[in-house]
Image (cartoon, rainbow, N blue to C red; front, side, top):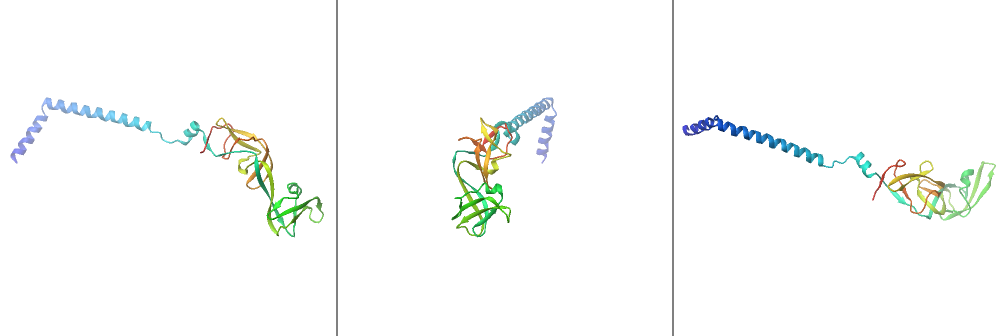
Length: 206
């Protein structure tokens, strides 16, 4: 036990010497310098990490959008029609959308009166082979048929050189899902299905 105490006393006595104090001071300076270097390196690494920022991503790469490439093609636009006893009554604007020969399930429209029925104030649509109830009269055509949600106030947005461009279009018919566009689009146009601003940089989703 006395030997251990003696060794401890010698160690403390050695620390108190000028030479030992100098070594301890140098060691502390080195440790502080290493800690400062470590902090600078750590900060640099953290700053180098690419943290995802949605606003910066949109500014650099464009807003992600879904698109469809349009082509003139056959399609169907549907018009609801309530039939009873192979007759339906519709308003003038709706009568203009219907014509003889339009399919309604397994049946068809036979005629659409041009005159107003005096008892109802409506136009009479005569059908054949159509059971009573709500049905869809099919208007078959060839043209640009796009999702109705792509049309906004008579316009659609298309992609040109990575930028959204507002294009006025003429929609001659539409139903709850589809719009039949007769002017304003060309084959190969990329119609944007997402909501964007005119002139915004866009990035097409794959």
